[in-house]
Length: 85
Image: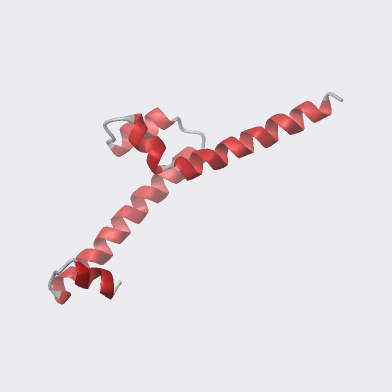
């Protein structure tokens, strides 16, 4: 992390605190959005909550989570269909 701060060309005293705050804030924001998506909240609602101007932004940012949720859906459908045999 120190290397990342030095590449920002900021003073070491201020930048370290700033960097920690930025990482914490970004991490909490990402965690919040991820929890909402896993709870079944729509992408449109998550996008509005995060202040994204477009759902595209949310979809691109959280594509890895959306793909995981789609895989869960596929598994659920396949299990449901297998009962019909």
